[in-house]
Length: 328
Image (cartoon, rainbow, N blue to C red):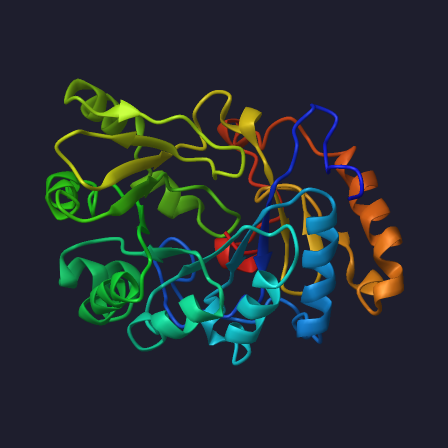
């Protein structure tokens, strides 16, 4: 194995978020309210061979978890092939995906058989009307059937992401808690994050996750210990609940101290942070296997410039126009 990817703050990177498309068929209020519009002119998405070389290089440098993201990753016709390729890579132990769930009902078993180990589904409301208002799509029941299909396919736990939005879904905590009482779901409340195109939305709808955190602790929920390849959520469990609660609070002090993930966009750019100022071009080194050493060297060199924090709390949103552009 090559040298473990590590930055100048001694943070090691075990987790790759690999975007395979920036296309999405939902119109979520906090991401693509006007629908998908191409952001990469005259540039195709990475092909299967190129994606394989990304995964291989990261695996050779200690990465054990790959999350396949978008946009909506399952819009790729070769999505199952990408899962299979990733699962076959030595050193990769977890293959996760984040999805809006619209294809999950039909394909959960197929993807599980291909090697997918973990699923995150976005469900921003348990009220079908509010779900429609937030996502722009009347697919609540279809997505919920997809979650049931994931359990039927053998996934032991499904993670469900809900972006907190003041005056929209922020009052649904009791309903969500009731939902996970007897279901092995890790429900993850994500604070709304300010991006370049969403300033007014952020001002109108941002709500801190601290109030939910305080509520959980006051009601007997206990924080779990993080594993080295876990994402940024603070996860809480309760003896009376089968499900868990995860809180992703990017505005919390020291949020970036435990950063263990890097991002590669669907067009082959390495991003140090979701809210970084630039991407590092990798695609020219993804054309044949003989370039892996140079690819690893470029990634290692780029890590020297990774900043200590995203500085979101200071109003810095970087170059990210919306979350779908580099995989959330």
